[in-house]
Length: 425
Image (cartoon, rainbow, N blue to C red):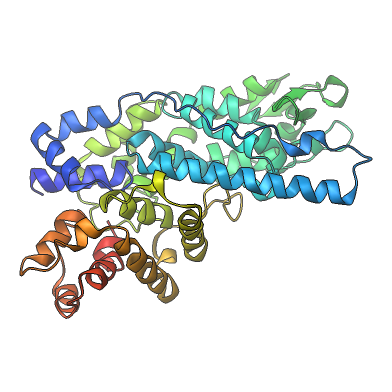
């Protein structure tokens, strides 16, 4: 790979759709300087003012109409938070891409949580702890009100243990299948008993009368563990670092989440710090060889297109924002609404006939919002201009043939946005 292609590859993986100008600047700076700049700590964004959680004012005597009104208000808050987050993503930078990674990893849905403030608080946890040691992140997430509601943790009591949270924390978030036993699930569930969510305060607290404080044998250790003790057992387990590395590889390098053993060993040598892991992943020789193997998730595709076309997402009308949301809905990925605790699919699952048609229709609409780009697509060099604007390394002969047949600049741009070369980075 040339230096320009290598930094293009790096920017495509670590950010939401790099612009041509960003690639030019990175090519001048070089790979190492660009990587250090991308992974430098970013200021935590000022959160939107969503107002109080409507559910907090409901009580047992609330009427049906009051509950319906609260749900409408809740839906409006979630819409506002989604819009704010899309604007944050479009602002660029690796920090929001990492926040989005953790959102897909610790997949939590507003459909069940029904609280935009709690979903925002979870996002802020990802921003605060997601780039550092995984230990503080796991400790914070075991206390996260949105996750507790999502996985029925508030129903987990000494008299009626609920294993959902304990099981998913080990299987999907920290260790992976095969690294724990059913006895470990039962023991971890007992450790997590008694945590209740206070919607008014937006916090979770331990109610000792519901908590089972008896000693347990958990992941090979016997004793009395609290939430922090359980988190420490998880992140110190031999399966934890390889598991996190595979998840990072699947989202940042290749849809095949099982890199060769020697690659995993090189990356995990960086330790539990997520920034160090990402740095090791991007510097590994195997990373450069993954170009053209990762299918963009719908959010990556849409936000990247908005950035590269210079669409002023912060100045879009309410109707245009609804169209953004409906496009993501049609493509099957809406932020704050993962389909299950397992998160969204990956790879070829996003490449269907229906999704191609949706991208083509959305591309035509985006082309209407990007006249400065379409005005450049009228000359004999229009395919080169397209590749430059969309940061595509090159077109296959088949795509060149299809693009050359399109004379209308807006339709040409839409066709390129729906091409395999743009969908697969």
